[in-house]
Length: 505
Image (cartoon, one colour):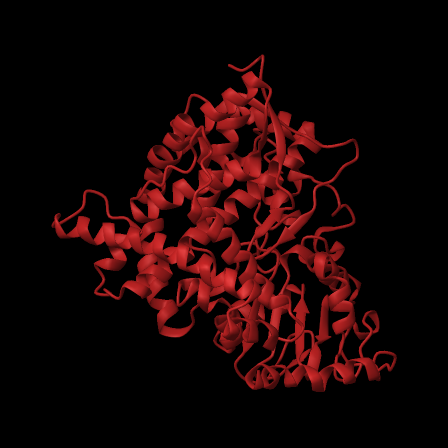
C-alpha cells in the first residue's frame, strides 16, 4: 500500500496545480501560430490536446494550416514543447541537410521498445545503418519483378479474386480494409521471410497473432497521446490496464515472429544455399544470430508491409467510389495494358500511379513522423529548437496546404501529377519533390519499399477493377473517419459490396 501511494504522489502534486491554473492564461509565445492555442502555466496546452484527442491528426493539421509559416510550437505539460511543421524547407532540413541532428531519439525508442525493440523503425546510428544496408539488397529490379510475378500475382489470383467473386455472387458485405490487410500480410511474409501465413483464406480466419498485432500497435501508439508519460510507465510497472494487455499482445507477436526465425534457421542448416534468398535469410547469414534482434527486424517489416499499403489502398478505393470519372480513366488504362507481361503492365500504369499519389496526398499511410533534436538548432523558418525537443513533420497537413498544391487542393485530381505529350497525347508522370510530399519520408531514411509498394498497389488495382466494382456500404452523405495509430486506418473498417462487371473483357 505504501509503494502504491508513493507511485501516485506525482499526481497528488500536479492535480491541484492543474485546477489552480485552469483559468490563467500565459503570455503569448513567440511561436509562429501561438495565437491559435490556449496555453497555461504548468499544463501548457494540455486542455486543448485532451479536447482533440480523438481527432489529433486533423486538429494538428488545422493548426499548421492556420500558421503563416506552416509551423506551430505546442506547449505540453511541465514545460515540454513539441514543434509541428508542414514547411518543406523545414522538412528538408530535418530529413536531409541536417539529418545527423534529428534522430528517432530516446523518447520514441522507449515508447515503442516493447513492441518494435531495436527494429529498423525504432533504431538510430550503426544499428539503423546495418539494417538498412542488408535490407536494400531486397529491393533491386530482379527482386521487384519476382515479387510481382510470383508472390503478388499468386495471392491475387488464388486468394483475393476468388473471395471477391464469391462475395459478388452472394451479394455479401466484406470489410475491405481487413481483406487488404490480410493480402498485404501474406505478401510481406512470403517475400521477406519465405513464409506463407495463409491469412487470406475464404474462411477469413481470426488469427491470434493478427489480433495481438493490432492491439500492440494501438496501445503502443496510445502512449504517445498521454499528457503525462508517467501514467503508462506506472501502469506498466504495476502490470495493470492497457499495459497488461500490451504485454500479453507483444508476447503473442514475438512468439509468432520467433517461430518464423527458428524455422528459417532450420531451413538454412539443411541448405548450403537457397534458390531464392529472402530478407530474413540475408540477416541470418550476415553474422547476427541473436534471436531477439532478428525478431525485432521481423516485427518491423511486418508492420511496414501489412499496414501501410493496405491503408493506402483502403482510402484509394473509397476515393474511386466518390470519383467515377477517375475510375473510368483507370479502367481505360488497365484495358490498354492487359496484353503486357504482369510486371511491365503495372510498371507502366501512369494514370493509376498518379491516382495513388493523389489519394495518399489526402490520406497518407503515416500521417505524422517525429524526430528528436540532438543539439540546439534553428529551422529555416526561424523556429528555435533545443536539444531533446521533438520535431514532427506532418504529411497529412502538407497535402492540404494551398501554398503547396494551389487553390484547388481540396479536389481529387490525379492530373496534377501528369503532363501530356503534345505530339503523342500520352501522359507522363511528374513527381513532386519528397520534401513537399514526404509520404515515403525523404533523405537517407527514405522508404526502401517505395517502388515495391507502388507495384503491389497497382497490381491489386488492376486485378480488382478489371473484374469488379467496389461499392462502399454507406448512408447517403456518410463519410468514413480517418484515424491512425502507428499507421492510418479507416475507423470501423471499410464495409463494401463487390459487384461483378458485366462488360469485363
